[in-house]
Image (cartoon, rainbow, N blue to C red; front, side, top):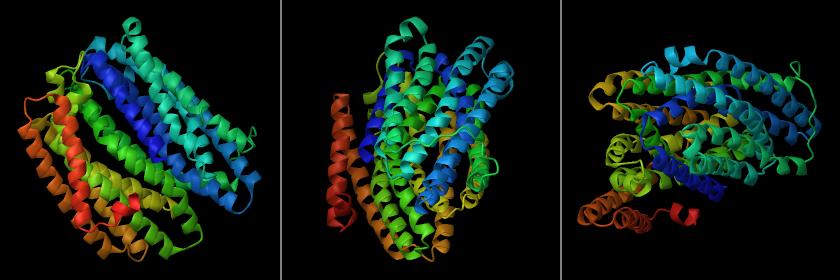
Length: 490
């Protein structure tokens, strides 16, 4: 799973490199990113993480009881309900797109930029409908402990956008990216279908509103939708605030965000995806001690990878952005804008990774409300800090607000899950974290010294050499400090 997620993230990075080369941090790219916001909100609220976190435990429960027929009845009803809701919402959003862009999504855009945003949004509204079905298929396969095809699905999505950006942008311009999104969503679904067929699809044309399983999914999903709505509102606030800044600010913020998500996606999402069904099984069997040990071990593993990633991304932010993006339409000014935001996002990378694991533990316990309440508080802080920090720090203030809020969210979730599981091997976890921070600090000093000493050299030497040296220093330091996670990960 980690290999598949790594491939997806590498291709995601390649996608952003191609987009940067073709469009830089231009006003056109701002329009595309603003247009993407509403389709993404629809998917996330109706069929994204909210549905997955509610669907997998319920579907897995049917399988654990040997009721495969009931499981497929549940999957069929959920697919049909999602299709009905998403089609209706997408049509409404397309009809009111001009008003939504002008008054809600990007009020700071000029008329030409708003018109382009509307065109792109209407085209991309097809994607959440397709992704809705694909997301449920992913949940079904994960419940059967099949992870490969769902993990590969984002790869074909990224390849679609890369292909359209390279080959269609000369004729379609920024519209090529919207075409890539729609085609990619179709491929995202298609690549998973063979895995579904091998497990004997039991689809039926029902809505199942009176089905107990459907109602359980709805019960678990409701608070999660509220939490995701707050997160999406936060992203929307970022878009609104950035639309009033200089051209390219939204694009720079997006490049920095995706760079921060690269290691987070490879490590945290892969571990969380693989651990979630195990958490769910242990919770269903009420094996609290085993779940406590599994969660603690998973947290140690993710901290071992995420803390040095935070330090390394901060220390090498400038050469990394230059190495990956600075070509074509992506000029020095674009690099400086992305680096400005990236340094603030890097501070919260480790917290994003830990939150990814902790929320899965709560979902496995059939508790979707607690992460929502903590998330609501954290995102409220995020919005307030964004309004305060945007004036002195421009788009960098939005990144710093996000990191601060996520760190607070992580602390809140840790305190509650520790009480819920009657401990979390806290002494061992704290000792390990201190050793990891020390090793990462040594790595940071070494990398900073290397970057300063090679200033003016080839960016491949500065960036690539800095990453390699940082990895070596960290690995040796953790061995010397006696970190067992080095051997466990191997």
